[in-house]
Amino acid sequence: MILAIPDITEQFLLVFHISGKTLLGLLPYILAGIVLGEILRNLSWLDKLNHWCHKTTLLSILIAAMLGVISPLCTYGTVPLVLMLARKGFPLPPLLTFLISSSSLNPQLFFVTWGGIDIELALVRLGTVLLFSLLAGMLLNIIPLNSILATERIEGDQQVTPHNGHATGKIGFKRSLRGMWKELKYIGWYMIIGCLLGAVIEVFVPGDWLYGLFKSRPLGSIMIAAILGVPVYVCGGGAIPLVNSLLTKGLNPGAALAFLTVGQTVRITPLFALAALVRVKYILVYIVTVLLFAVLIGLIYSTT
Image (cartoon, rainbow, N blue to C red; front, side):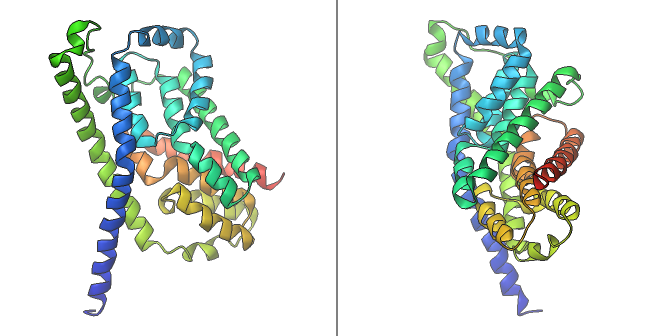
């Protein structure tokens, strides 16, 4: 028992090392999202864009889904931007569609999937993300969002800096800095928790443990892969070598797609980011929805 203590200590030190490294890697994206949100908040043409989104919500959902997959911002960089636009009165369905799409796939991850596995799975992932984002956006467009959203967080600061000369002066600059600092503290709390939990999973869940779990019939392997995508999937790029290794050992391609779909969409880190916008009980509904969709799309892909 005494001999095991150093190993446990080393593992926990590794957790802090990995989470700290992840935190530092995410910080530039978070800051970029906060600064971009503050810049956009002071642009006069944003009101015209807001008006257009309200007039053509379905088209704006489609555009939001496509913009999401080409956005280089991670989820933590996207959340402050979405919060700012929501406070400006933008319709929430396209905003949440953009958030779902951007957290599920980005240009870097698309090319990593292409190079690490093959172009077919990369394109299928892209199509899967676009389809799910569009379906989610259209569903959000027809259901009342007041009970789903954490409205007290979205409505936390409704004041908008006026578009005049004073806004660009010393007072306006200080107001902007205070607003950005407030957003950083708010998002930072969720970011720290998410990074710590992600590191715990990475350290204490061995990759080899997955090999035996996927050796079952197509439906069974797809369901197991989808379920394991929630707790096991930590890093988008880091998951690709593991999935490729499993595929070479005979993993069903549908199971690989289900694992990547669920893992990237509802992994621990973006779930805590989503908690900044959505009430916790509805995050659970979101997880179940993603699981069912991933199993269905995995079954379809495995039979084609």
